[in-house]
Image (cartoon, rainbow, N blue to C red):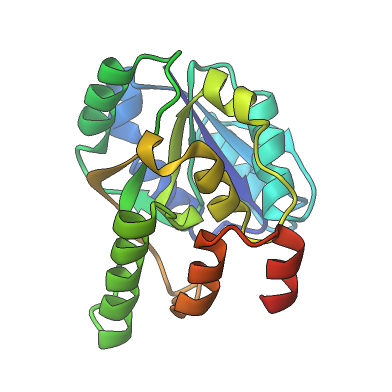
Length: 219
């Protein structure tokens, strides 16, 4: 049913935790395959992926090129784009299954998860609040929140593009009325990835549909 695409570049520290959160969904038949879209890792990323039974796709060094490469070889009716530093909370597959059964794989709807961080410090809580507001009010989830989308809809949109804030660009093309934020959490491991600083001005400019080239200069 779901092809999970995990874009990777030297992700040996985080990949096992990401895979662990997919086990139950694989057993239940919700996840059909896991694709590690590798950008040229020099650590044990590919060894870990092979041991876990994941398929390997080869992309470029940029994350968007890895997302594109993984999607190109996905065989499921649905694609879940999931960063390697993310672990989905238990029961995510039940909620995702309910969403998919209501939508059907041919309808133009997509979903993301609530953003959460492992740490308990104030900066992490502020980042979670900012992500929640951005997702709820603007329907511009971060890439770390995952993206569950029908394959037909992904192809209709033309996939990810090589632009600034490619995840927000994809969300904007999906459209606020067609993007659902699920209750399940996408929990980010910040030991290997710094907590993202809120950038409300850049987000507001993106929401106003400024051209991607101009946003790249601001970013």
